[in-house]
Length: 233
Length: 226
Image (tube, one colour):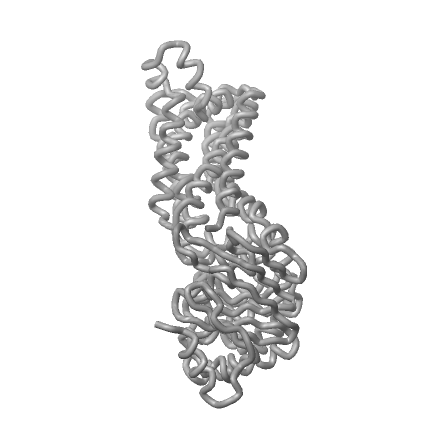
């Protein structure tokens, strides 16, 4: 599987479409946080982490859209599926490669807690749990985007399907959506949103239910992607 | 041995492969002939487990290509139609990737034998059609496969390149079972020792190659009706 991951990472690094989104993510994530930092006067990373899911809504599908779509368009999927690898290995390799790239992109935002720590005292456990939450969030978004990428040979269709689906999922956990619903429906819909569970991490809470949610979400979409590859019709 | 027993494959309502059966023998070079859309590529993909048959059974060295796909693929080298390659990769990166997948230690020697030494560091997208075909062919030989399935291996090549690939197939056929599809009937006459002609998904001829010159063309015209 190391061979597959290496090939995936190389395919990202060999094309500007692969590494430019990562650099842009780093630049924009830093900019949007720093621009408000001195206006609000708040030396907390919470506003950055609350903004992060909306950044990832664009970044992760943009990064993952080519994973299978491009293989289908160029028909290299036939090369891949006629090599002695299980479908599960292929899906996991693509997922892990996306996750590594996401990890690199996320590490570009480490400049924020570092620079903030020079200005004031930051509460490190909360920052670490928030970053852990961001990793889980990125993993779940990646798995969903991989699934949509496996559905089509058109990268734009793959990207838009992922963005729209993730947008509605995030919307479910937003205050705006919750305010529209009666309380009993709120209790049902809001916990379906990754935003709701990510907010627990941002508060510095490691909730077992949120961990379970992200694991199940990621597993479900990886499993559906494997099923899609196994169909091969 | 590759065995197909009453295999059918549908794409929607269309029957791409219709109840076909054949058995390969060791050392055979089978020319797989038929007009466009006859079902040649589908049959090859079924043997590899890339597609699943709707009816019938396929066995490759006693293994089921759907249930034991990975084990089957360790024994089969495949050159797909139109030779899809990762264009952004360099030649050595691509070959190394396939070699690691197929556990081939001597991949550099095979690549040299196929005549790729001069383009090792070039990106695949920069190669001529002939070199691209050689890359695909070299990759299909990795892992010392028992069977070679080559879908239009000389398509788009100039006559000189075609001759080289034909000679290579003949040489490889001394040790391996080869199934190759082609539109060029004279090629089947030069290389194959058995012919399977397929039309509308059905086998219309399975037997020895005619001995007389131009016999393959005559046979093809007789069997394949417009």
